[in-house]
Length: 327
Image 1: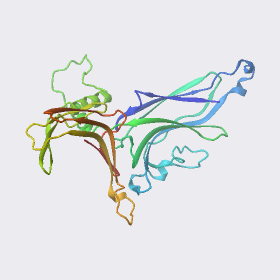
Image 2: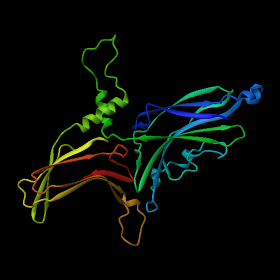
Image 3: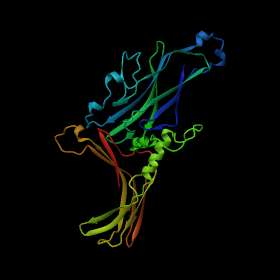
Image 4: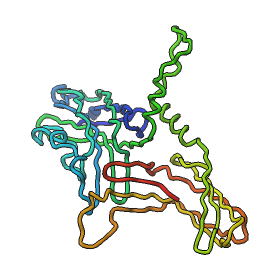
């Protein structure tokens, strides 16, 4: 028996264009004490091959006609005989929208009892890779699949889930970082401007979400102005609090109470919705996450604070779906 374990280098969250690292270890457990008298040839475990590949699967409901241009071709998903070839998505539900080239870790490796061997797998995600997303209409899920086979045995698969997060504007940040530095430099010192991809992304995210630009909105009804709402900025990070204020001074209508909800709007491209004889709105799904309800009678100002969950996906857009956030 061979035990296989995988450890992601740098954590389970990645961005399009970043490099994914995974350490894969194959271990032959030690034999029990009463079996150690056997010869090495009797207990040696042989693996014929092992390969690794990254795939992104897209799952949709029955009312969506998945666009064929987004699917990975059959040649990229599966080659050869199903009994001896590495086909990690052959039995999975959904559509394969991203598939990296399989990489062979080894061929014909033998492990003695108590012996283990580790291999480092690295791959760069495409810049146009969609983010991980779990919606009501569309789902994008990533996994690293390790396939292996012993002689005269079926193929075994180990799947490692990963999360991909899109940060729009990162490409422009990379261009800025790579600009020529005209300041005097010391050839005996390493450049202090060589940042890691993660540090660059975090800095870019900080620059985007730190910009404070108050925006004011007048809330009205048929009888006139009810309140003036202020948001201090437009871009937020996951896990951050959305802060705003309500101003009830100089209004035409008294406000007794208000409710504010943080909602995610998931809209599927209408070109991919199945034709139905009855009109329907199956291409849009709205989910509310956090809500604040407050009584404000005889109040001049009020305060809003809503937390953004950490396990949701930021706003993004693909050929199939557009995800937006709103209050």
